[in-house]
Image 1: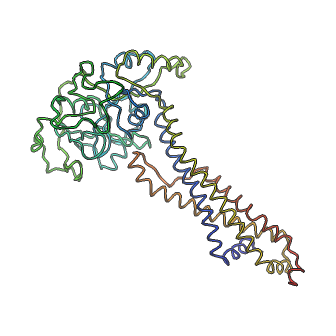
Image 2: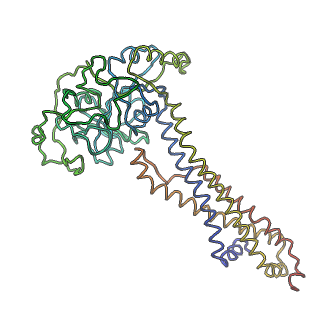
Image 3: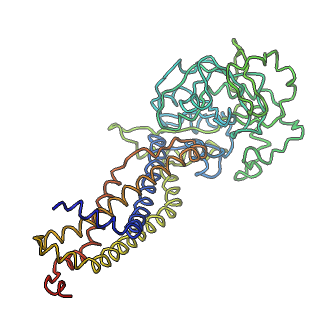
Length: 485
């Protein structure tokens, strides 16, 4: 006797009841699987991007905003800090091993242009797929995702736009960037960035006079409220000239003739149609070479990604974790700081409430599905007592009848598991484009987690438990009494 075939025929004889049980199992398993997929991919990306970053230094403001803007690049910065204000507090801090500069403020088609140096590339262990690392002003090396989405290749040129979001920002049409390299995919934030040197960002905004705003409203600098950053008056940064905001251009670029674009030929689009890039559907043909030296006097920086000094055993110095921040407080008047590990833990606690509720909902649905399966099998058993008695007469043992009912429960649970995991993975894949647009990370539904194997075991156990009582009832069927009835 083939137990599998017999169990399947019994289930097929009651298609609607069987389908209801399978769908309920699938709902619980699918929801749990989806939660695992989302959690794993978010946590992987969040934690991997803060590896070996002990501190983020930026303008005083929200520590969480500092982390989101400078590490994950999904928020606007808290502001800029004068470069000379960081000389002792950051760059000459004896407890800081490495301080990676970041100059933010511009984007290209929604992808952020980040002014930094070789340390940033080394920190993320970035590998070059094509070309080389940026070396000179106005050269950029782009992340793999940026190159793929914007169809950028070596030698392509483009104009950056002011602001950190697509559309609405002024296009810097006097100095184009040139792509000199493309990074290999790393599944880190690097994939979503356009990297250049810090002086390129400074140069892009040099000479813009903030005394003449020409009607621009600076109460909202891409979402930054500069009216009150813990008492700092941004109209006067210790005598700094605000004609250059590393990454924050608040002028109207007075003196730019947008009808001429300084001799650029707009008939050459480099083969790329970017018709919806702040109203400009062209890329410049040439990048200016032999640019004059640029002084760091009066310049600003958006943030530093910091690593503490190590002790003789190669571990982070405990003294550095305390003393480094004290020196920043003492010597850097406008700089604040945030510890990524602490802020990420806060973020996970804030978002974890919703996930916890979903997990409880998944458990509730699984319980309901087990109960539904039990009712279906028990009701079916009442209708099949005569058939079970005939099977006993024909030589079927009690143990075989017991196994047939248990097999029915297992088949329903496995079918529910397969349906639920398929729907959860498909849903994740469908949502991946929207998640990527929002969080600037790539997501996928086509990955299998070990937790899902545990879900398979859990679903089989649910099927067995739901079938135990009906199977026991089949096991103790009285043949003579049943047949005489």
